[in-house]
Image (cartoon, rainbow, N blue to C red; front, side, top):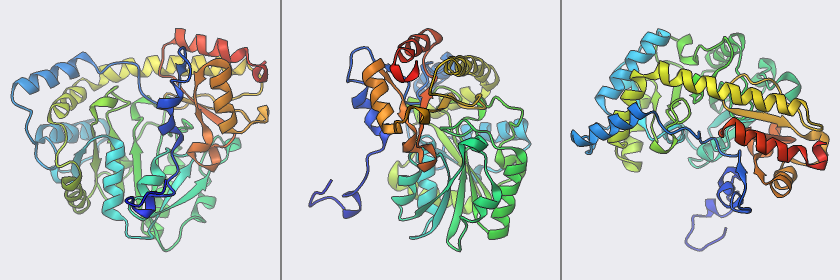
Length: 386
C-alpha cells in the first residue's frame, strides 16, 4: 500500500494468509475455524492463580531487563533436569512469545544482506522477521514425497559466504515433521563447517509424537552455535499471555536485551509468574495436552484416509495436519476459498508457508472431536472430496 508517510519498504508488503483469517472467519455465521494455531484450552488454573497471586504480591512492576530472576532460574533448572543442558542467568532473555524472540534475534545478528536459511514449508512470519531487519531469506524446499525431510546434500547448496543462520523448527509448523537425530547432527556439522548459527525454533516440543524428543540445544550441552527460541503458547496453552525466551551465548543475549529495551522494555510481570507455575507443573499439564491433541490429530488423519483427492502423512508432531490437495486440480488459495464457501470451514493455504507448501492445506486440531466431526462431515459432502 503506497502512502506518502509510509516507509517505502512497506509499500509492497504482501499480507500473510494468516493475517487474513480474522476477516475470513466472519464470512459466514457458522464457520468452523481450523486455521490459526490457537489452542481451545485455557491456560491451566494453577498458572492463572500464580498470576493472580503474583499481582496481589506486587508483581505488577517492571522486572529485570533479562526477565524475572525466578523464572530464569526455574528455566535453567528445567533444562538441566530434563535434558542435561546447562546455561547461566545471563544466557537467557525472557520474551513476549516466540515471534518476539525471533525478531529480537534477527535484529541482533543480521547485517544488511546477511542470509538466513528457512526449511520450507516454514512458519509464515519467518520471511518478514528476516526482511524487516534487511536480511535475506534463502529457502530450502523439502519434498512431500520425502515426508518433508531434509536432504543434507541439497541443503548444503543453499549455503553461501553470507549465510548467518539456519532455522530448524522440529516438530515443524506446518508439516508436523520431526527431523531425525541423524539429520540434526548433519545440520550441526554443516553449521560448524561453514561457521553459521543454528536457530532451534522449539515451539512444539511437548507435542512430539515420535521417540526423537531431544531438543537441538542438548546436542551441545551449553550455549554455543545453537540459539534456542521458545514459547509457552502451544506447550501450555498460553497464547494470549505472550511469554517465551531465548537461550544463547551471553554476548547475543546482551544485544537482544538492548534491542528489547527499545521495543518492549520488559515483559509482562504477572505472565512471568504464571510461567514459573507452568514449569513447576509442566509434566502434568503437558501430558494432558499431548494426549488430547494426539487423539485429535489421529481423528483428522483417519477421516482424511476415507476421502478422495486429499491425503496426509501420519502425524509426527504439533497439532496440525498438512494435507495434500493436488489431486483436486485446484491451487492452495483456490481450495482455501472453496472449502470456506462450500463447507463453511476455514483452514490455511499451504502456499503461505513457502513454495514447498503449494498444493497443501493446513488443518489445525484446535477444536474438540465433536466439532472436528462436524467440519469433516461438511467437507465430505463437497464434490471434490467425494
